[in-house]
Image (cartoon, rainbow, N blue to C red; front, top):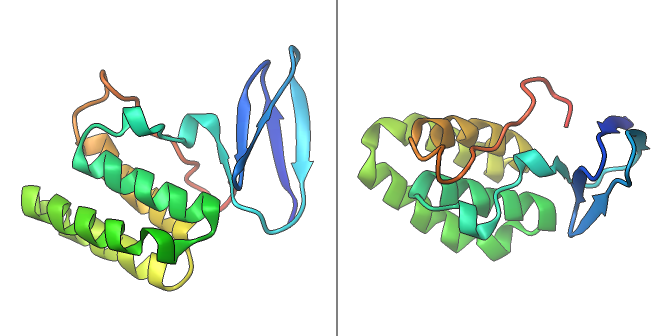
Length: 137
């Protein structure tokens, strides 16, 4: 199913391990294929991941973009345990994300973990990623 993106001037689109940067005018892109895609506003840079929920989100983000869950599995488990230890109330979201990752749905796991980044209270230091609520990316 093709994905349609309307990118503003100089807006970035992360496609797998590559970054597409739009030029100086608004442009519409249609991407076909089964490649992981995130808008720049949904990507947390390493320096933006300052607390455990954000680090967990970043870990799953890399699983998704690099299409390599095995590479990040150990980090995910460690960060998930740390997040649950710090805030047991987040157990439900983390468990749901784990199930989604195990079933090969890291994008949906990102949407689940988005809830934790919004609750983390560090919005001023590191903007929380915004993912679309629908099935589109």
